[in-house]
Length: 379
Image (cartoon, one colour):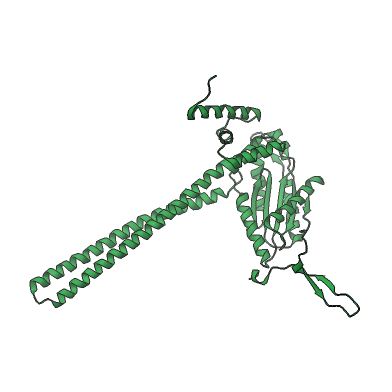
């Protein structure tokens, strides 16, 4: 078989690799999976390649659920990011055009005003009726031109504002879509991580501490294998709705990835946060799952949940990591349970140590003061 040359030959060679990958991993040849592995074998998406290769190195299987996550993270999101970038460029272009049109009109109006002023001044000094009539006629024509230019500018501004409004709406829509999980309709991990970063910053400035919950559906891969990914997706949607309906409107529920959900509760104390987690665990575990088409009872699913309160000593990553460890502790201890995260471990810096003078016969005593946010960090 001859060597593949040119762009068409390269595309055919990649297509062969894609088909082999789909067969190797037992995946149906859907457009999404084909595109995912085409981009992987093409080598144009380093982040996608790293994600796939790290999963394979860890012994993970590239099943349909994993590949849907990969597609959403690297392919669908990339398209949305391009749409956001295009909308941003259009907004900048329209804003610049609007500025140019207004600036050009200002110059034109100023020049017309100067011409009219000169004509009126000459008319005031003229003693010749014919010249006076000519000057006034020219001033009137100049005034009409200004009015016409103003009407044209108004029309152009109206058109530009309409375009600006449409592009702004497209930008907001693309941004919202880029931060929404397409399966459940919940905010996605990107949106949630931004909310966590803001929450940690508020705590460091002396604000009340919110609560983080990480919840994972127990044995979900086995459920998918038994009942199929279509049913599994319906279960993910149902769990998402239950979580959203059973917390306050101000709380943020997101799909963290796969069968895992993340919930950011407004400040209420760790004990109350644990109580909310227990309520969510009981609510999800008490619902039986039935296939609507057949009425077949598929049993129940349960949640393991980690809970942790933000600390001024946490970074966003450390807070999430503490709660994640609590979640996996719940898994190790039998699943279908809630575990509270350990408080943050921290080292004492020299700035946190103060020496108090002792008696003449006693050495000075060292006291350790907890590090609080600096005065300039607080409102």
